[in-house]
Image (cartoon, rainbow, N blue to C red; front, side, top):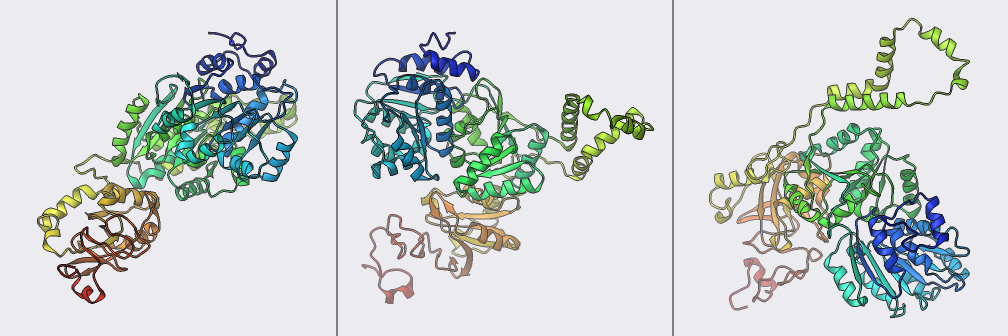
Length: 619
């Protein structure tokens, strides 16, 4: 293994990183640093988060800066404000002994006027989020005509967040003979397009395999019923008393709800999502970095680019839609050679996703056993005893009061004293888990049915179809809800890529902690019907109506029975596969243009023909 000195790092930078505790270069640094110290060398480096990428591009970029020329000579583009600040801090640390070298972070959510003033004073390296840098370019307060290095960090994340056009705009202001350095954890198709469009003949440096997960991360999944997800999350936290991690949720609403519940239940938790102001986000991150917060509940967007050391766990409260996001999530732990644990709390419907992720990250998940109350209490107790053994005793400070304490407790035997100490610390937790029911994992049955009915559409649908005859009664023209169940209309169907699992997903995402039994589901071309218990009807409508599915606004309402089938009360009808919708609901192909569904090859019909329901022949 080479040293940083052997890689060609300058003495001033070497002195700074030695003080930071850098001893030997990590694999990505050993590969990238000497190459970037050469002339006109472009790099695509694929390596997991936490493998030392910032130093890999930061050290050679700093070394090539001409300090006497106080103009931007390098730009580092990154997807989030948090990562922008982190990279700028690291570059300032590395350049501690390079006199007069200036690094400036520019990002949205902070005063643009103060950033403009700093630019006028002169900077050498700009670390920026794309949106804010474009704002500064448009105000003509920053010149990029002397930039000779452009670094895209977390490039795959920038593509996922839709920054492609922003990159085009920024690069149009940079000299064409600049070097581009692209650092990414995964290699989606969009990365290949960028390299072909903007890079000349880049060297591809891959640490590990493309898209694979971090080597030091252990992957676990817990199979649970929908109603038990939050209870299992709490048990995971209780079973790991020293947990320090991020819990990823799918939506901002769910993120805030889970954080609020954890705080209410006495956990050191806080939320991080897009609805928070920059001041609030900075405050949350400061508390998290200081470990005043043990569990950070976050959305993918908010947590992208977070650079926090020593995370013990990453918990997926819901699996992401794409595997690359899982790779980024799990890469937040197991950094810099340390070990970490990535946990997925899933239901039966998500088991297939686990298999897909395993193929991509080239690792196997272990099935976790939900810890019992007894196991949790034992783990907490021994953690407390370990801390007690390591307590530093200040003899001088307590010398005066010890005699009085000895006299007060003299009547207690050692065993009695230990029992009282333990009971004082753990009575509340012991009582809680004595009264708590044990959580059972769902049994895999035909149709993927959960024990608690949360994902029970498969069996009940097929049974309902057999009882009603044919294709569940659809051929008979009339369909009636089973006794005790309400039939609901939803404005999503097969054309939307919508299926039974998506109905379950919407319920799980938007009715957190509430058990909902789903009955019969009928999928149409452009819309669907599903049944829930009558008692749950109003809560389901209120929770799902107005939410989003694949970027579309969801409309849910009770279906009204009419001759020939069901119609939505507000205009959606079931008429053999065609549906009339409200104007704002859809503008898909095939005539769904806000005025109603128009089958291919048929023209609109006049108002006088509407009574008959269909256009007259020949119209």
